[in-house]
Length: 124
Picture 1: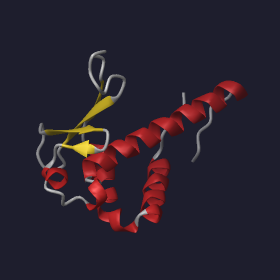
Picture 2: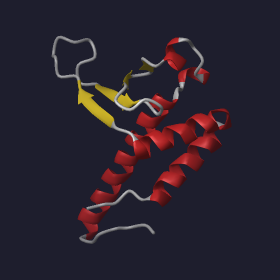
Picture 3: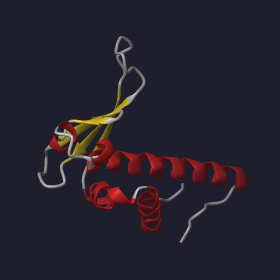
Picture 4: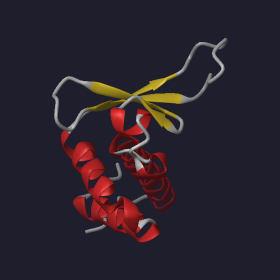
């Protein structure tokens, strides 16, 4: 079973900041959410829904335990997003879901590599 490490998270954060330095503080806040708060994935399973097959992410508030914001596609229900204060629409909740998706992609790749090689890969 592949492992996602603190080093991996640090690499994702640095990569994100390199790609868009204007989002640096949002990326830091999103990483904190990723590590300390709940992100619940909910697949859209209603075949009649326009967004059937997509995923809604329920992301716990950084400041209020038990309060969740819904991230769906390129939207979020938080006030930073709805009041257009998030740069280019990237609130910390959306960025946290992007970190989650990137971490899942990395784990899938490692698991495939492990399966093919017959060994466990852990990057220290």
